Amino acid sequence: MKIVALSGGADSVCLLLKTVEAGHSVEALHCNFHLRGAESDRDEEFCHSLCRKLGVRLRVKHFDTAAYASEHKVSIEMAARELRYAWFEEVRQELGADDILVAHHQDDNIETMLFNLMRGTGISGLTGMKERNGHIVRPLLDMTRQEILVFLAERGQDYVTDSTNLETDVIRNKIRLQLLPLMEEIFPSVRKNLVKTMRYLQKTETVVNGGRSAELDLFTLLKPLGFTSKQIEAIADGRWKMGKERVGDESPMGTLSVQTYQKGNGFKPSKEPFLITLDADKVKTPLVMRYVKEGDRFKPFGMKGCSKLVSDFLTDLKIEAYERHSQPVVCDAEGEIIWLVGHRVCHKVACTENTINILELRYSNI
Image (cartoon, rainbow, N blue to C red; front, side, top):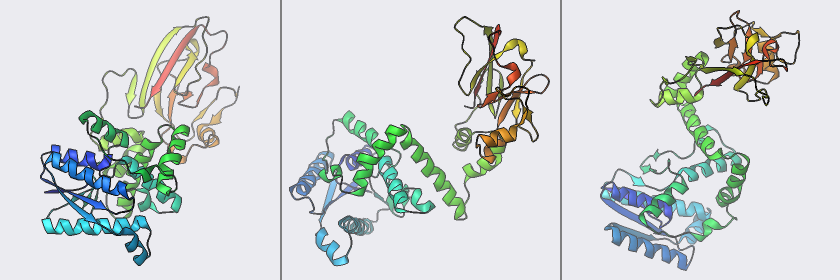
């Protein structure tokens, strides 16, 4: 028996459909908090209609939420939460069910993280909601709001909309309607990165509390060997493998692809950090890619006749110490560094107006 919390909104309707489609015996629970007048009754009637169509039993509980909030001196939002979860637990125990399924999704989790961050919190408050918290289970935490809407559209399933979700006088609504769109305008992948950060912090919290995290253990072991965070995450998830189609020097530190060609009239030296163009006639091959060593020096382009400690150069760029230890360099046949990967080439191999042949080096850490 699966208990599903059903508000009638897109998220809970999606959860109900998924649970039914998975072949589970389902009982739905709907709370009427009587906070939105006729709209609250509309939501209740929608849930009755949907459950009749799906052949799902529906229980409805009516609450005087405002009176409860006044009596217990809590906000309306907190009153609704306390009433809802107390009733859910009563039903769970009555039915002898293991879990109560609720429809929080990935976007809800991001809003929770940002809300806690602005309010002030420790690691726990930045890890977001857990997929399981006691008997409460959140199966949709990996789904975005947009993915939920697509799921419903594909099935031609309608849902109700809570008009208070569109008002900007509630903090969470302001985060959803104003803050997150602004953050995406500045950094389009911010949602994905916040989810990744929450997962990292969940692993950190596990270790802080005396547990073990396979990914953090792997990070400690493999990061000094040059594996990237993306590769270590893939290894922990069992998704990582070396591609046989890669060209050039392939190692945990990345791939170096090499190409030579004659300079044309429209040639311009590359300004990309991981794609460089050198004077092929000045480069002594074969090339070797390795990690930076203590005492390494090189002659950065733009510093004629001068050499500089690689460690000092990276420090000037404000590269963190732990990143400096895994910095790749490309050396020529005599062991001289000709490229500090991602940052600067050596002065003596840079292209000039007299260059005839081009050596192109491309670095990838994927």
